[in-house]
Figure (cartoon, helix red, strand yellow):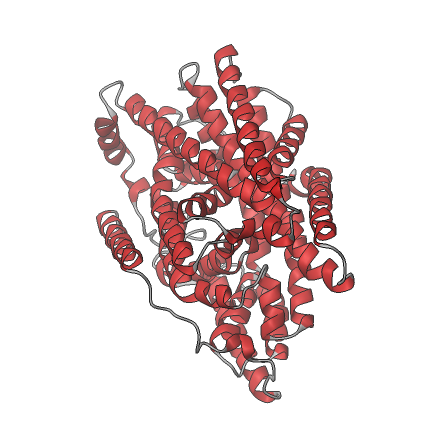
Amino acid sequence: MKLDMLDTSVFIAYVVGLLILALWISRNESTHERNTEDYFLASKSLPWWAIGASLIASNISAEQIIGMSGSGYAMGLAIASYEWMSAITLLIVGKYLLPIFLKNEIYTMPQYLEQRFDARVKTILALFWLVVYVFVNLTAVLWLGGLAIETVAGVDWLFGMIFLALFSIAYSLYGGLKAVAFTDILQVVLLVFGGLLLSYLALDAVADGQGFLVGFGILTEKVPTHFDMILSSDNPNYMSLPGISVLVGGMWVMNFSYWGFNQYIIQRALAAKSTAEAQKGIAFAAYLKMLMPLIVVLPGIAAVILYPDLTKPDEAYPSMMSLMPAGIKGLVFAALVAAIVSSLASMTNSISTIFTMDIYKPIKPNKSQTHYVFIGRLATLVALSLALITAQPLLGKFDQAFQYIQEFTGMFTPGIVVIFVLGMFWQRATSMGALSAALGSAILSFTLKMLMPEIPFMDRVGIVFLLCMALAIGVSLLGKPSTNNSSVSLDDVKFNTEPSFNVAAIGCVIVLAVLYVTWW
């Protein structure tokens, strides 16, 4: 599939417009010498709408759009649990976790671990996150993004990856988090509009021009099993989404790790004007998450009817784009690229923050603010260069890069969640308990995968979480109580939320309950 002249013109207009917006935002920031708070935390000035939009723009990328559409093609609406369960997770993070982080005035997640435990825990986790962000997350986004550009525009995947890297640098390197967050507003508008338009046209095509409501009815009639939210044990996709444990098992661990303790996600909320503003932004993001299945999963289900003979499920989304008329195709392609470059910019900004504040600054503690900002920019360039070099060797042999991400991070996710949960809510937790959870997570995950491969991945995450929790508690009780407990005190933390957040949370829960009851 190739883009015609009108599509290309629309796409170029998007690229130029985004760069102009980013430069304008960055120029407004240049009235004084930029310090680390300006660059890494947007001067702690982000409003709720920028936080919510940036959270979603950072989250949605090629692996979500293409991968989840492919999963919609293969297994149906059940894959939407990743999105809908995330909405509930966001609300819990906003009410119970975020106030603790903001009270401690941190830049990074490793910084909190140093305040709560010691420098060993901080350094080990900081190095782990740097490796994961560069060699797992960045490589996956670049690789899948390059393949998407090759499929849609006919440009070689390598040149596509280079374009994405240069594009993300061009609009984020100078302005830092503020440039990323405010341009994310444009990215999300385009992503939502383009995605909803594609879903509308797909359902209309299923109905042969009789409208999207008729098309949706035809889908539910012809492929009813694709609308089962909870898969039975005899379903061929049960290993990926193991029935009721999707609602009560390991997915909660994965979601809390991602939305609560993931630097490139939570950094937006850390940059808020206030706790209340951050919570409003998180509630806004929760509603956008509920909308995502309409944008990324529904087109994949429609492709079952329109393109029943695809060789791979991940071809569903690019194939659906061929339905687009001239001009609209360029707009939807721009939305796809918008999601990719936003994720790249968010990841590289967080990589530079962790490297500068948690690794470099302790080694060189007395440098100027300008120097640290320079090191952050340099870290961004190095991280993207490494990801470009290693993306194809690491991911070229995988049929689904999304599985690569889940399998690798899932080895460590249970331990990370245990460390933070015990560290935040149990004063008796010690640094040795935290380190035992981190090490135990990798060992136990690998052992269970080798000895009991029949256990679904998500169930294995839940089991390892419980084992790591028991291990960390046991080791902590055997050791001496921690003397560095200032960060764990909850006396000054206010968990009460504004009425607007409470109403939004109740509304979200009601909507999700209706969705699950309807499609159970």
